[in-house]
Length: 165
Image (cartoon, rainbow, N blue to C red; front, side, top):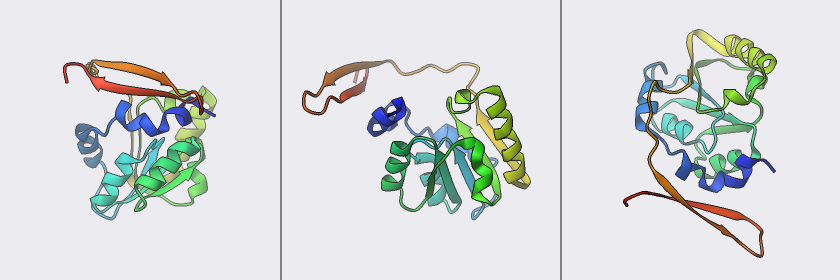
């Protein structure tokens, strides 16, 4: 079981949907009805928002628990458990392919090269790849964590709460 599988149920609390990220992605998404691919979709919240706004959204993630969470939470979007460098196996093109967070950092240089080649092939003419590497400056909210171990299941649960709330 991967680290991401272990905290899939709490991923949204740790890395919530950010409106400013979505609005940035929308600038490159084309018109309603365009095909969008989230490479490393996690729990699928950006796919769901694109779907809600009239786009055809697809999310891929290597972690099966993340895909289970996304599929259960957002049945209107399409999700696949697969590596981001295998997007050519989807056999279609996309107006926008994006990846947020540290997804691409998990790829070796050779796998990153394969990912970029497959992105190029999967982009429709005029399409765009957005990889959000980070901002020049970003202040993470101050959070505290309480960790509890469940005797029966052996699970570790992490609960985050904004400081001062």
